[in-house]
Length: 216
Ligand SMILES: [Zn+2]
Image (cartoon, rainbow, N blue to C red):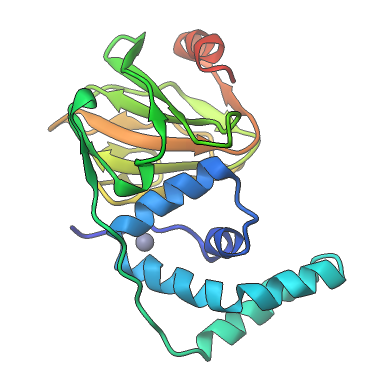
C-alpha cells in the first residue's frame, strides 16, 4: 500500500502533547496503524512531548515553539514502534482498524441516495464528532466548507476532490480554506472515517438533509 497523504507535523505534535481532540486523534491513530513513516514521526514528537508540555505550562504558547520543536526532532535518532494489527468486525461487512476496537460503532444508516453513515462513539468522549461514511462508486458527496479542521482517513475504495486523489491508508486534513466536493472513485464503494473540529457548513439539498441527522 502506497500512502501519499499524511497528517501534518502540527497535527502529530498536537497528538503527542494530548492537544488533539478525541475524534481527530482516533482518525490519526487509524492512519498510524497503516503508516510506518508517521509512527516514526510520532515517536519522535512524543520523545520531546514532555519538554513541550513543560514549556506550555510556564508560558503561553511561544510563537517559535513549533519551529524549535522541529529543530529538536531533526537532531534526534529515529525509532519505530510496532502497532497491533486490525480486528475483524463482521457486522459492518468491513475490516475495522485495531485503533477502533474500543469504539461503539453504529449500524449503517441511510443518509442520501447511495450514501450511508455510521456513528462512531469513543469511550469517555461522547461529544466527539466522528463517523464512518460509505459512498457508492461514482457518487458526489455533498459540497461543504469548514469552520474547523476535517480529518478523513480512507478505509476502502477511493475519493478525489479538487485538490487530489485519496486511496486506502491516505489521511486528508481539510482546513477552513478548503471548500470541497469529494467524489467517490468509479471502481468501488468508498468507506472512510471522518472527524471534525469546529463546525462544518454543509451546502445544498443533501447538506440540509445531513445536518439534522448527523447533528452538525
Ligand atoms: Zn502517514
